[in-house]
Image (cartoon, rainbow, N blue to C red):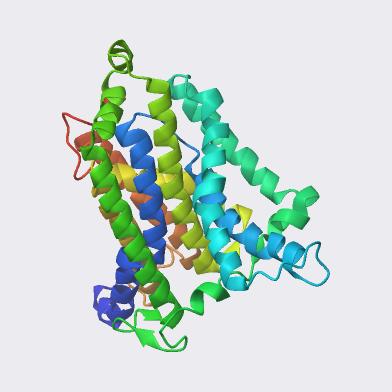
Length: 355
């Protein structure tokens, strides 16, 4: 190991990528999904391993309306020739992606599962998420979902609103124009989501959710319909997840089934566990730390290998991806052992080993 080669590392590149992980679009959509999961698990005690399905609902709600439905009702070869502009179809897609699709999915997922125990609920939700992904990949529904290729080409309407030069670089060169616009809009949405979550949890409704988490039988004994409250929490948390999935799809300009695999749900869980469940701001900070660390380790390790800081006999460039996830796993194991409530969680209120 040549420590003198540390000087040859492009520390500016390392810093830029770390900052993009801390505040960029990848952090934003996982933070939104983690806020939704925090409503499910942190405040209501719902062990949901299907958050990726809600993210897919948001992405495909927008994509299907703008790319599949729009030609059918607006083009000359379509069925109706309604003449609805692309801008209005985008707005309708936003409504379907944020409200209609996640609400329907929450009802379909929640009606048969919310009466189950936590461990059975986890099994069912992860199975439902995988069923939805397989449905979206199915060639039978290629005309609707684009099958394994997905649906793309719907981000142009969003970026047409951008005041930034698409070829320019902004915020100390961290983002190009379209990325800068998405990050600003994403931060506005994220700020509103955090504020709404804070207000909700301080309300009587939010206190009932926390009571359900602590002792559902006691809540029922006091005359509250715990099943109804859990369904409402599932819907609301799913909407936050759908917002995250929609921002991800706009950033990629693509809604594709394999962008919402089970691993995505586990990344959301990592962000929540890292920050601390049951705290309003903790999932946001957890997502920021997670992707800041992932970006830092990726660039730092790759440059360390290429500059000879780390010998290729120890680590090769193709192994960097696996090693950084091993480091995250080790960090989580240590967190679970020494601070199970997460970095900002309250040990008396929420700890992983109490579930």
